[in-house]
Length: 180
Image 1: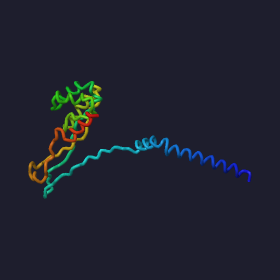
Image 2: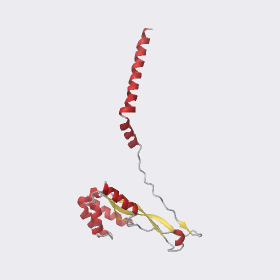
Image 3: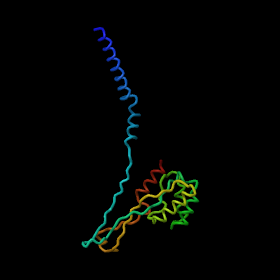
Image 4: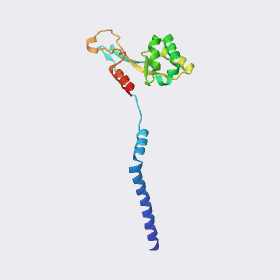
């Protein structure tokens, strides 16, 4: 069996190559492979907690949920055009120029609320004007709103979804981002 020795050497050679690759994957390149695998399987899906309608015994709504746009900004992107963007917002929306301007210029943040619960047509008009001037970094996000068609009927049972100017979580996030 003269070919048996050659076949044995070939099998040992192939097994040696597989073994060397296994050692490389398990030791030398393990961190890089894990990083690539983490990025390839990472998908962010925003899942808003939708609140349902609360109806009375006759099926009439006591509380309903909906969405309106909010305008947000990335201050790191739009800081050079902050004054012009703040002027557009102050002219079109009911916001104070001097309150919006510092939000648009905050160098350490990548997210800032500009206006919440904006009527959709007005929000689109503002975004179109900003885009027409080739300014970047201002976008629209859905903002949940709660309406009470029956007024304060059963208010003690329903509760009330109020507006936070700035929640404790947002204050904490700003403090942490400023410390970094």
